Image (tube, helix red, strand yellow):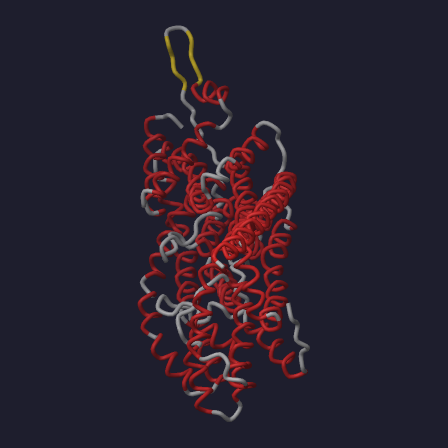
Length: 272
Length: 264
């Protein structure tokens, strides 16, 4: 991988882009999603590249107003990459505007999938798991650890990503995608995420069955019988019932209402 | 009650503008952060922290499926904490109310979504003016003055005038309702975890769910220990996969070159 040596102006632009790449959800809407955030992030780059070329500037602004949507962390990588591509477009004209568009579009899906599984489904779950453990004992350190692990860490990654996007450019993308390592990374992150979800289901999901069967002289506490087969069996069954309903297209709101009604009914007939 | 409601809405507004609009972490607006803040403002920090832990687990998996968020974690967490602290209700009742309140709040904000989409054409025109400062400032103002402000106003009304009514209403209900609500709060957690599981699940890695489960139920390990074991497994797995990929690549390269030799 070839690495460029950055000039003072490039460093300045990249620093400004790093700060602006935190505006991902600026005026977020369902039509163009993160387009406004991307335009705002690209503004320092566009101003520095096109300077007095009003036509080029207009084209570039319009280009980055296109629909854009990915995870907030690779957002800064793609912005850095777009800076590199815009610069080539202006200086050497080796990349045309449409290529910039299509590379951006091509990167949205894979980066979103990869970073959702790394950050949203993995790091966030671990951070929340540790935070919840401390907070449930009334320790505010849990909240602070959560913010550091899940929040501040994103900014650290963003800082490196915007620079890598610019310096390594497309060579980096080629090597990551063609090597097939993305799949391996996503898979290992999924393993970690699922283990944490399993652990937290065990810790927290609770079906508080309080039902005693009276058969003649003896009475049987149903929950004890079930838990002696497999601890928390009802919780696991409930979870996988909900998973299968979600896979069939049930909406979360329907599930929430369903559980509410079921719990109230259970309370009424006295099994809870 | 009105002063407390004002303070709490102001704190909400600051958080809601900061995250997601200014830092885009989607972290500061989580229940585990806002519930302790609400507790601190209302004078019962510890309850806020403890409820923050429970609310975070309720809302952990509640995320957008198909574009709309089923329940607003931030506002409903604040209302749940305010309800518990201001009326002296037990924590379980507050927790059980959080998700239904969140669903209502999310559908209120959902009404605004068409409005946000309608402005999209204006942003494009503004961007074409090539005035990056103006673009940034107008976008920031728009973001700060729409959803966060409207939510803050609703939150103020809910805490100032809704909490006591809700408490009186719950007190007038028969005992089995509270039992049912308590049971619901334990089972509601399953919804979030089910969403998460269905997002991550595939046949190859699904079994690891049960590994985590058994670590807790049979071995009684805490979250940090499980996270470390999980990281070890994930790293081992990554390098194994990497080796397989490398091997596959070198094999295909060989066959390709063989074919070429045959061809010529």
